[in-house]
Amino acid sequence: MRPTRTLGFQLLGVWLVVNGIVGLGPGLAIPGVGFVAAVLAIAAGLLILLGRG
Image (cartoon, rainbow, N blue to C red; front, side, top):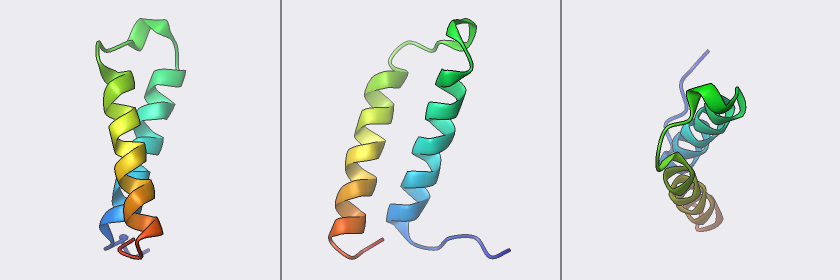
């Protein structure tokens, strides 16, 4: 399997992993992870919509 080379889809992948970790439960809560996930989602969405993803 080839790794994704576009920045938008790489950020999307990181966002999915972060959300998956957060969804595992409150025992794995990391302060500020919600803000980081939101920034990643916005950045990935904008890059994909602009055609750079």
